[in-house]
Image 1 (cartoon, rainbow, N blue to C red):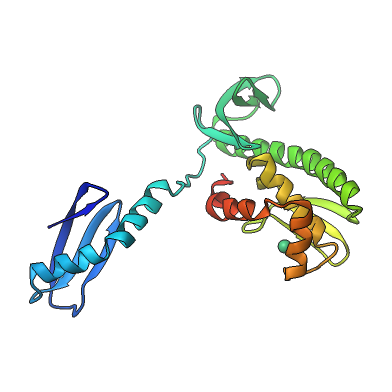
Image 2 (cartoon, helix red, strand yellow; image 1 turned 135 degrees about the vertical axis):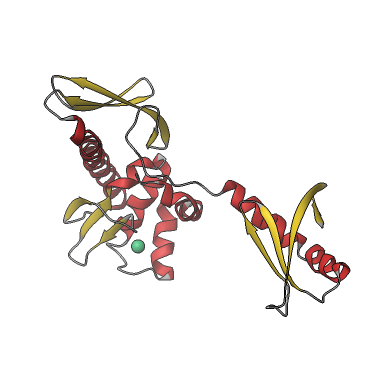
Length: 236
Ligand SMILES: [Zn+2]
């Protein structure tokens, strides 16, 4: 059995079962698998699959472009994202520990006193701290810059380690950002800053709030979509 999508012939794995009364189609790792009742004719099954070809084609495309999330092992050659650019991770040993960006590489140097057993944790901690520090600098500066333009001033700015949000704005006027946003391209960071600043005017996600965001950042919709699609890649 096969399915033709965009002139490409795709093999279909047909599994017959008596435990089903209807046909179900699943896509696993780009392969099409069809579960069908034993008595249903092949011609009828083929018809059902052909009718679903648009849907299958779209799902296959989505799967192929879905970003893969891998947790970092802090080994040479891995890539880390900073302000939307990719850097090759490099580990070094020297007298003192440090983290630096240099000619396309993110170099994490561990001091000589760090034992082999502690290495992975030590890299994770110091690289996280480095992102945290960069976040403090960049987000404080961007918040001040956009805040001046919009005549909005938060009572304080904090950098936090959120699991599933990019920022928040308390009723007290305190704005918090997730340090992981530092991995995103600059325009996405700008959007998050403007989003939180706009909460100083509207403490909700009402239409008024989105109009406020759109006034200072017309391309905000594209940034929201980007975060929805790629946000989960901004972590390690
Ligand atoms: Zn919000």
